[in-house]
Length: 295
Image (cartoon, helix red, strand yellow):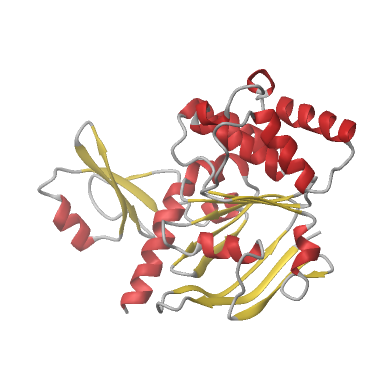
């Protein structure tokens, strides 16, 4: 099944245009939706998850017209929002049993087996009797994904799932997502480039409600090959470098600025060619979007 998004637009009552004619085709596997905070990612996820209606556009998942029949999608949807609440004094086991019941699994033995299976899959079985109020951020996220997949969804949406997690928990969570994403459509919304680079075979970058690029991450990165240059400069040189060249990013190396410059040929003395990566694409595309808006 594929998710087909065509011409979705959404403007909130305060005048903010969160989605501006968004069109995407998302197939089985991991799909990464990259963008800065406020780019429209959560608005798109909420629309797909049937939590809000767009002003215009269409949304279909396989044969389901999502906007016309939202309940049909909800039956096969798993959703892990950026912020979600849990009862802190309930155990993980009781919490998951409650949500499994809500998803229509009424047979007691079937539900007990499912809860045990999900707790094992998310590496929470040993902590199943502990109150979720004592869980770390990563443990809560893993419990959240267990809740989201309790109904065997065909479409899974996860919104900024690794924000705030330490490196160990982040990698544990990403490995879990990769396992889940082998057989269903999984949309990973994030501002963390590494999450998409490590997991996704398809992606889009969204900025200010617009899709600025979409496709295979490797092919998108390939488009920068031979046109990316690096130079270590002094802090006093930096303003002149930014004025003279198309600088897509600036980082610090031992306190000294390192610039990445986009150019069809070597920009000048001291610049060396570098292999592009997805982070370079991200900054380049956001820069182009900013230039287009300013023009």
